Image 1 (cartoon, rainbow, N blue to C red):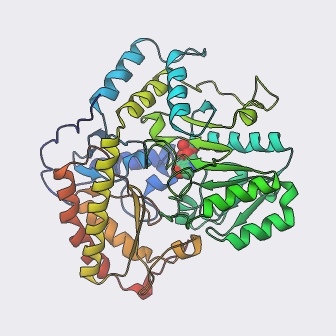
Image 2: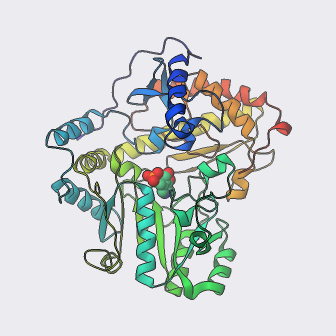
Image 3: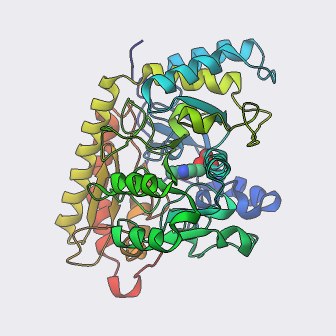
Length: 460
Ligand SMILES: Cc1ncc(COP(=O)(O)O)c(C=O)c1O
């Protein structure tokens, strides 16, 4: 199968379009749903203004309820690697739906998707779930069951879904809301979680020196994207794996965002390649679900054998391995050729460089960081050259980001509505879509420059 970017629809009639229909839907949504949304960042709280209610999407474009077209740089927060409504994915989904939508039995597509994942990634066995949250929650339960230990090490700024025990200093959503944790999580849940600063080998050594024989696992984003993109320092993931092995703990690499997004081999691994070692468990989501609710965790055969019904660690799900979702995931992975990743890498480089030039030209201090085709733009203080951890990511001028975001939106480009997120491209971002982004960037950079830094210094 080949990847064909879907044909570009006609240009939007105007920029800074009406938001009347979205505003009306938002008002109705507010009456029946907390905050009017089903996931907090969608509410535009971090940037203000009316969230756009999207009615359809095609290739690199979103079309909202007012009929306005936007070039999409969110991609449903990562899954839409091939762009929206890819014809071959839709065909596969239509065929799957015509056979019924859920049986609660094992099915062929889930075997084929599991084979595809086992074939590409360093996992011996894989179990499907319906969200990345379930994947990390289950991986942690399994690590605890396997080791007979309770403590979990995570890093500040890494987000692993809304798992009780992992909602401590958990990156973008919480950073954006300025909430350090969340009410509703019992102290006992987070008491077994050690939160360490990211990219800090000394903190890892100190935690293991003190608690080594009680640590069940270390969980980390393979390359964090949830505090903006913060690449692991060279050797950091390897150090985590080695330290875990030395102390009898498991190393859990969360690839829900990076998996199949950054490379065809599905995992980001050891600073780009797995050489002679592998994580004990990996979690996947987003791209492998092809835009449907599907996620997975997998790993070493002896660890996965602990899972019910083979072993004693219980885990289950009514819709796990759903035939429509696994069909969409399989079609997506089959279409995600090396050519697709080469296009994504190139397109990401073009947009990154253009964003940086526009900001430099406008005199806006910034740092642009990337891991493969995932990248983020941090609007920092003058003189900052790198963002290595959550504390640095938090020192952003979010007021400048707000102005930047809204100027992009007015120019017809839909950025993530938060300063702590990845900008996601797709295989469908063709020259027309890229040109639109490139012409919007200088306008947005000038809008950011117009915001005085001293009044709007943000904080995670
Ligand atoms: C690295 C990582 N892990 C886990 C999750 C949770 O996935 P989900 O939102 O599907 O529950 C996310 C979501 O953004 C993520 O980025």
